Length: 130
Image (cartoon, rainbow, N blue to C red; front, side, top):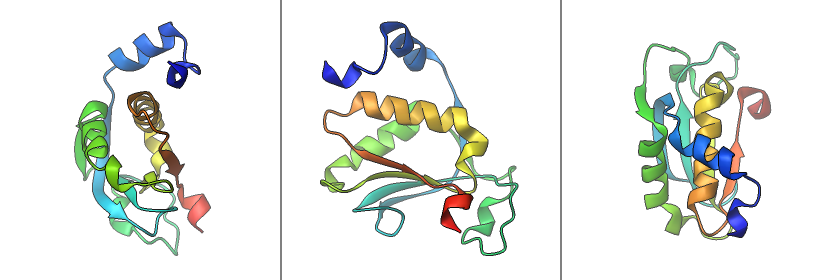
């Protein structure tokens, strides 16, 4: 019950019922360099910033990637949560995650609701990497 304290019932119904699609470049299931601990890393597709020192220029193109819904991604993440331990969790990187903010936000909200143990969430935008 305490895991739902930050959400009203109306918010929970809205979060669970809306269908939002995201465009994913790739997934790394047991990453160790994109945040603390062992992480499930979601690389979003699409970025308008074109940073000179970008580590993932293959994520820039908005027309590539694999379209997926929040529930499909959530299912993949939850299959690996036993590997996260105390310090691990989920990182959303890219591309630029904020270009798909509604998909990322809904996924993180559903992830928070779905887990019994707190998973550390970490969203990296290009601005934070450089």
